[in-house]
Length: 171
Image: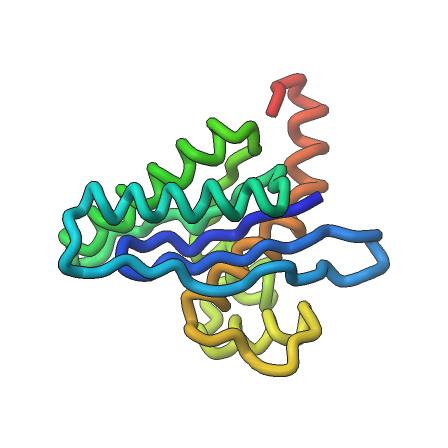
């Protein structure tokens, strides 16, 4: 099973494709990086670029699940707007491709990766490297954040499956 973790953004969109293997083994990193769009391009062109890149990643790795970090509104509404638009395009492309979509809040991701929901970014990135057996902390930070989201999803998948089974709700 391949999971695509996403740290959504309009300028920089972190991504990480993890391959889930036997429960006794750590997930394997198959792709890790940042999708970038030119800041001087029109918003809809940038969104189309992101959609195309996500479509290519999903096709290359036959992604079954897409996990995104939920957008939390901060003081900068203009930045939040672009992030929300990018997240929407990614979710739509994931559903169109037949993937299951999940969102996790920042504190939920931090808790799953470090055991503490208020962990600083550096601690999250360091734990990502440790959990995935990477030689170095993923750089730029958007890539580390996307890997953390994918790890969170893998940690939450058994709980989601049990909840879905118990409630009788599909997906």
